[in-house]
Figure (cartoon, rainbow, N blue to C red):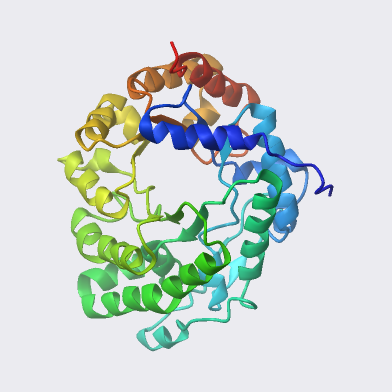
Length: 361
């Protein structure tokens, strides 16, 4: 693995992302999450990749160069790191990303809550690999890394089981709050403080929390059990903490009510991704972003990217970019590109953004 090769040209993409906040970028930058593509593209087993910070960085950079992606999310299997650090078993595979061993949750009964203690992050699980990952990223790009973590609800769901956790919240709310408090105060706050000490110039701590979405949860649970614990993280660590990836507002009678709760945990920008954007229209998200004077991130869905034709992908992305990019405050996102996605579809999406996202026209 040749680490002498630098990837400083990615600085241009990250600068476009910064300029988008004020509407001064020359064009819409393209983000992508490509972790699922790595085994296929690199011809290396997923188990090896997610134990090797060098391979993960280099592979991600090279794939982004191949498809013309400006900005990528370099991360490990983010939903697993903190859980693994306190003893949750994982399952590693050759072809797909690691996952929680869902047959053996760490918190099987209430007494197991004592297992949630602050670990030694220097030695626990793959925490040191996270440090290596971001150090290599910064070395190769000259860019301060935004750091990913697993948010309180998804972390609690992974060590308790999502169905069991929701039942706790409905039938045993005292224990559910105790579990959420423990996850937040004993694990996540110390972990983010540790990371902040290692990377004091990070522009953002980005929480991953896909399970905290409709219809998995409802608005009451979001309001009472999920948002408050992200707010605790923001109070402890600072305003650089955000959780942008809740979805499912299309299921709500009043989608704006969901967006208002989302704004509590991510007051930095507005995000919408398929199939919500497909259902509600990019106009809904653009109007909400303008109402709150925030930049907008729109994402085309992984399932559509994989199943659509290049023409269908091009036309949808064109529509999203033309609506969302009117004032130059749009980022475009290719959501968690799935294995088996045709190369032509990825290229069609990027081409559409480049063609219709030129803010200088």
